[in-house]
Every structure is written in structure tokens, then in C-alpha cells.
Length: 285
Image (cartoon, rainbow, N blue to C red):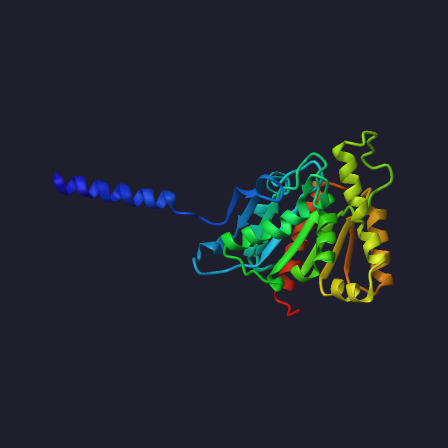
């Protein structure tokens, strides 16, 4: 009887270890405290199948959401876990960690604005937190950024002004600068006004237009991919950006596909973005 009891305990302990054991791939929702923003910030993170190999380190892609969405958008609407698993298992891209931060839903955005120093938070707190907590190869060659709409504008602005941080940038349907009559508010204290001002102050088109020779050389060290639909309301916005890139002879890839400002379009864009940034991880800068 005693032998049976010990056996039962052993089996129960083994089952508990199996239940507690982490399995990969995994898509987690996590939280960190920010001193810069003075609040807790959530994020989603995708850990690939190979993360189960305890000593293995991975490149990282920071994947940004659009206006009115949060860190859960790529998880809930973008099908990121299934697309990533599909691309990685087919050998179309190296396995990477995909990090989806939260830039707020109420016209907050990725740039610094009064009461919302998000760009400072991203580079001073968020990236260090992620790359210390997870098994990430924390150098420029193995770090990339991508995003859609507002997040595409954030992707472009971050990669231009912090070119030493990223090997590749993939901008989807990007808000490259303020669009005429966009999100108009007559309340000077409105979050919309602060958001609009941050986009105007960080206009990606104007940044390239006024870039010095050294800034152009720095921007050109990033591998650029601009992806926008022919029916997207931001099409002209993106073409204006491309025009300035051409004038400054900064290399880029451009894809104009059939489609608009939709999740169907962005899911297909992600299927191209993952192989693109993967190639950058293998390129010496």
C-alpha cells in the first residue's frame, strides 16, 4: 500500500511538471512599469518554437500597431502567431521574437508629446526591458522594426532618427505625415491636437527632404521596405515619401499591391515583412 502511495505521488509530481512546463511557440501578454510615462504599459510578445532550446538566442522584430488599436491588435486582428509559425516552419525566415508594444488608443502615438513622452519610453525603457528579460541578440544587426498606419509612421520615424538601432524597417500603409483634414479637433486641449502636432513635428517626408548628407548616409544604412495598397487613403502620403527618398538617392524597396487600409492587406504584408527583416539579420552592416 505504501509503495502504491509513493508511486501515485511520483506520477502526480511528474504531471504537475508537465503542466507547468512552458511550450512554444507562445504568444504572451505582459506588463512593465514605466518611470518615463508614470504608468504600467502592456505588450504582447511572440516566442517562436525554438525558444524551448534554453541556450538559444534570437533576433527581434518590434511590430507596431495603428491608431485606435493597442498591443493586442496584431494578436487579435493580425493573426501574427499563425503567420509567424507558418513562415518560420516553411523556412522562409529565421525564427525571431516579435514584440508588440502599446502606444495607446486615445490619440497618443509613438512620438513625444506633452504628457506623453513615448519615444523616450520606447528607447530608454522598453527596448532595454525586452532585451534583458528575453533571450534576444541585442545588437543592431539582429533588431528590426515594422508597423502599420500610425505604426508605419512610427516605424519610419524611429528608423530614420535612430538608424543605429535597426537593420531593417518595413512600413505598411504608413502615416508618413499629417493628412489634410485628418482627425480635426477645435479643442486646443484635446488629445487629438497633441497627436496631430506630434505627427506634424515628426513628419517623415519633411525629415528626408531636409536631411543633411550625413543623415542621408545614416538613413541609407537601414534596409527600407515601403508597402502600400493602391486603394489606401495614405497612398499619396507614401508616394510623397518615396519621391523624397529618390531625390536623396536613398535605397528602398517599394510594393504597391491591390488593396486598401485593411487587416487583410496587413496580414499579407506581414508575410512579406518577416522574410525581409530575416534577410537583414543575416546581412553585415
